[in-house]
Length: 619
Image (cartoon, rainbow, N blue to C red; front, side, top):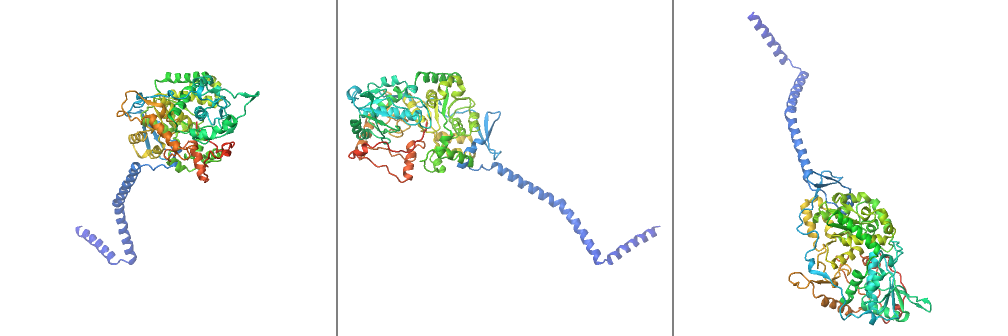
């Protein structure tokens, strides 16, 4: 048996050997293919898992890089798109602003204002200054200087606060001309279309009596031969000084006896004798009082705000379509926005071509409602603050306002704190509605302005005069790039930079140099330091009488001192919403130069009204 098995085994061996020895070429190919297949199977088991692991690591690295990389810088055309974020709050009281285009990029805004290192409700050393506008002993009174045959009339221009500048300046102009002032006519034909007369907005009897020692004021022109005197109509240049008025108007008054000055706003120089500046302040801050009806309603609105909170902020938002159109700014709304605002912009036929990039660089674009809210939070105001908003129809409506309301849910306006019935006597009259907002903003603990228009200037000056209550004006030139790049920094870094940029824009005493800026915003001649204050303790400007007198003398020594005295303001100082800014740029773009008028040319003195560039209503 063993032998057989060995034979069988040997037989198999014989067969295998023969198979190997007798391989054909085809069988060799088959053999090599099988070997290759076995090797490939081994590679798949060992190499492919390694490749997969490396690929997975690379994908993880790319994902981590995309999360950690900074968000792209926003350009000016993304400005309004910041409004199209949605907000959510986490359990730690943090408001998260998330972009629709990048749901991983967040800008975390705290609900609490945190510590800003300053008292939010007062300005530093404000108690060391006070308003002072009493007439000097040597200031001639109306009864000894008024010429009975000289009567001055003015036609105001624009909205309520623009007209207010004209009224106060008319009092000074009448004093300069030794003329009797006729109660000014209010503009009823401008954009505002308000039919109110002077005595329906202001207490006319108080206006006349409180200024009686300075200027004689009457309600209407006297008659001559049973007929009213017909006034001669003309216009004076912008920012005309005392000699300008005397040289241009005295010859006309002596001949015509009554002159009406049209479009009377910003027609008086910022630089005058201090006694004339004080008269300006007496007219503005003491003689111009709203009617009892307006005052009572305004007081009721203030009382209702006080019932809600001990302190409140008032914001003049000014984000209406007309403001945005006039500014020439781009708010990121694309072609739709350009068409809508461009159509409104055509209302001012003399406006220069818009240059959004240049306007934004110079800080002349209003902040969006969301940006105003972020500014307030960075300055230290928490979400519990009560906010009163003076505003017309906001461009973009509730969608635009939503981020501001999310940051400050205690959001109020005269329409929310007063009933429709209570507002009925005012709602059809833009100036009366503006007067109500004026009162609430004036009485607020902190006033925020989103543009440097007429209401902002009038309130800023008034709040300085009556105690330097905090008045915050955004430093838009510095804040604009900060807002654009806010997603590239932490909230703490953003807030710190914003507070630094706002230094000098918070309504502090002496933050504006004497003689700089528009007088109604900075009535330096009417603000005195408290007795006993040492100059080393507070940076007080030079003696106001000496300083102002020097300015007045310098004006008189100018070659054209009897005519136009427009102050030369640098581009940085020029306010984007100032009416003169529009006129100045249009004249330059058209290559026009305003001629200087000489007294020796009597024909020009008697020249009637000339066309003037249409003005901007920036109330």
